[in-house]
Image (cartoon, rainbow, N blue to C red; front, side, top):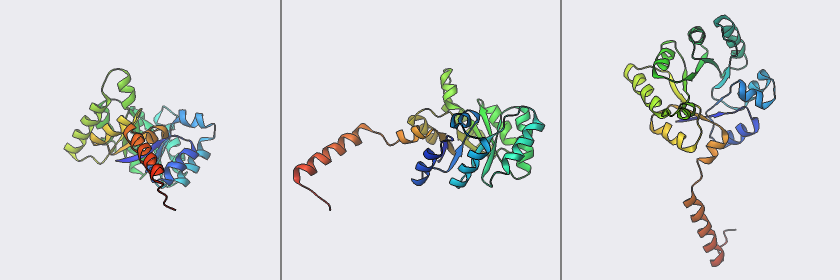
Length: 217
C-alpha cells in the first residue's frame, strides 16, 4: 500500500520523505489555509520535494470554472493530481482532465455508487472518507471493501485512496481491505511505529547492556 501524507507542512513532508515513507501528498483548502501560505507557492514547493502525485484541490463548484482551475493547477508541475469533489460538475471536470492526460483525484466519496461513477469518469484516484463515515456510525472500512470488489470485478484502474484516516488502526485496516493508497496526517504515520512491548523490550535490553558493561564503540 502506498503512503500519501495529508498535509501542507513542508517540514513534516520532508522528514517522512527522507525516511522513504512518502509516495505522494494530498492537500485541500483547509490544509492550505492552515499553512498560511499561497496555494500555488506551497503546492509548487511540495511538488519539488516529492516524486509522487501531489493532489491540489479546486475551489470552484461549476464545471467550467473547475476545469479552468484544474488546468491552472496542472501547470504547476508534472506530478500534480487535480482534486475535484464528487459532484456531477466534478465528474465532468474529471472526464475532461483525464482525457487530456491529467491525473485526477475525486474526493469526498461516501458510497460505492459514487466510486463506480468516478471510475467510469476516468478518475486516477477515488478518495473514500473513512473517518467521517465512522463519525456517523457507519464502518468506513466496509466501503473500502465494497469499492475493492466492484473495481476488481470490472478491471477498473482507478486506485482506491483511503482518506480521512484518523488512527494507526485505520492504516492497518485499509491495507487489509486492499486499498491501493492511504493518505494520513504525519502524526498518524508516526504512530504506526508505536507498541508498548517494543518500548518495554528496548528498556530491558538497555538495562541489561548497561549492567553487563556492553559497549559497541
